[in-house]
Image (tube, rainbow, N blue to C red):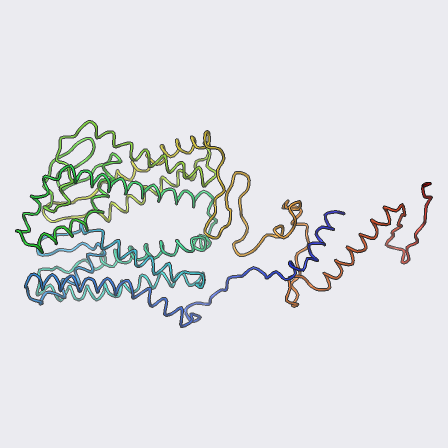
Length: 509
């Protein structure tokens, strides 16, 4: 009788009766149900990143033409080509094919798209409206791309610019914009995105994804550090790269800015080398095991490219991907339920890292005129997978053996969703019934046996008649216990209307 009594006492708590019901997400009804405020937000997502990008392109193009003292006849073609170059679209200028464009402008543009998408996908955004956010983030750049393709076609009669492949242009713009929008939305509403999937994701997918992306970030940081170190080692060759400037201040400034813009490209190539892979430089190649010489562009950043021969101590650099893999395994051990027999989060991290490195290699590489194709080989992605999977497994197992059990992890909603003995599987917008009872009734079976709260229109969670009945039942129970303590027996029978109390023999005092 103690369990029902406590439950009834909880029902009679005035604080519980006045507790508000958890918020429930509203469901939108499509484009027609969008409010003017939401339409304005979507318009900003579609227009603001593209407008800022075009403004910067206008300033750079006209500033360069003014500084060079040239005419403005080819400015429209230069602006259209710059927009396509920012989206990594291969172009043919004269007889020179250029597909190796700097990553810094692309990264800045994608960051703006991701930020706008993240702000639009805030708490006020319905789940059904997330598709409209992605559509807006893609629609604006596609519209400008169509205009730039038409301008490039017209400008080909004035400047040496061949119209690019239409399908390739739209494909690059669509892919990059959609990826940036998805990343921005996932940073705010990743759980809503997973809820849209036809199947429920296992609990090891999210920790593995995060560990894999963190491993890629560490590899990129190591690649950038290796690039700067090699640049400093070969400092004496920098002066030769500035000879093309002819002593002009604007020429030196332009080469410096161009080198900084290409620095992420070189860092991605360095990741391939550190992982044991190979970077193709036209007919030559570069790796930790072999260098095949080939001409490189005369820009300051290429001074970091070693000319050989290969030193034996370079093999010690393989500790970099091994360390990144071990750290990824430690992250999986802290944030997942991975164990030696089922390292699913660690394998997920390895797969995510391999795919991310492959995509970065595809974006960072390309054709560069007479120098040929400069890009990491595809084997780099496979090597990254092996490093993160094997070294990550070692780190995960070592953490389990020497580091103790996994800590409790929390997502951005504050929900604890994995631990060694408990996994939170409750719905995102509902609270479990046993959260409102005392600690002694936290067992799930006892919580399921409790009656469901009535939803009356009285403003509270429970009907007033139910509360009154609960209070009366509690009072009757207390009276029965008092009578039993005094030695009086109560005879109860459901078929007898009037209960007769029989006084038994009382002990002698």
